[in-house]
Image (cartoon, rainbow, N blue to C red; front, side):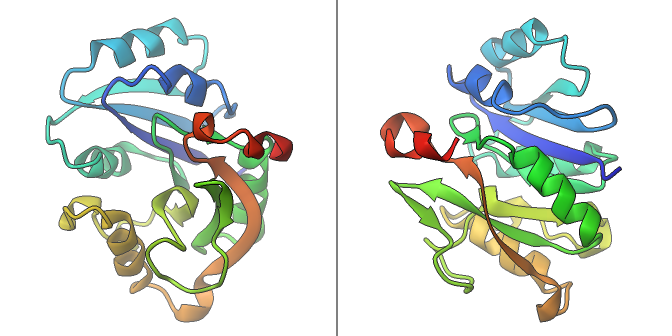
Length: 198
């Protein structure tokens, strides 16, 4: 079975519990919740959800860099086959983990761009790498340190775009698989429309 690792940087938002209960992983999977410095609220939520054997809270460096350093730390800690990146104010769509695992099992070693619900609509809308069309929450990538960029190499607001582009430089253009499946809902409280997808 393909082992998955979800990496969630956090500043202790109250929505963290909602994310952590929006998907269920399996034995052998990992879910790292990594604090941007001390985040006692997030640590408490993880302890309250200790029944989830794959969940682990880690206090990361205090950087204030949109979670980039924390994502890099999560990648270094993981022993799983694939990385999934989920922010603490978003949620997984129903069936997302099963969908990701199936895709990764069918095409091992390939990077994926799934779809997400963002700002009242679905992206990607076209198979092109551009800001606003792709984002970190849709990128599912193998845990192969030789073919991974670093999130913290770019400290701009479009650092996820830089991570995706720089990581894909280690792959052939034909390796990237575009999937039409919606795996995450960005800030679901901002739109009621997404609920028909669940």
